[in-house]
Image 1 (cartoon, rainbow, N blue to C red):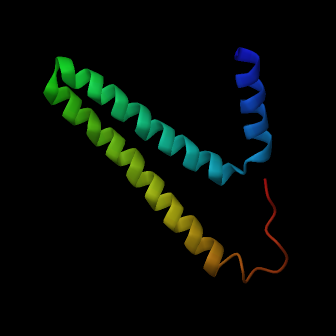
Image 2 (cartoon, rainbow, N blue to C red):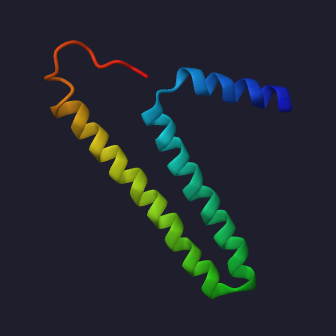
Length: 87
């Protein structure tokens, strides 16, 4: 199982562009923080609610990044000579 996870992560790392990796990290961070906030709120509701703010910030960063990259792709990268290089 560990080997299959290593190969999946290696494939993801080599085939996914950096912009999409960043989006995946934002969503994963938001999901993990929401799960942890749920567990923490069983013990301390105030701390659980406060940690949901962190998840909201991560989700807001995801949305902002998605909007900015789409606007950049639609308005700026189309007008550049040649195709943009994929890193």
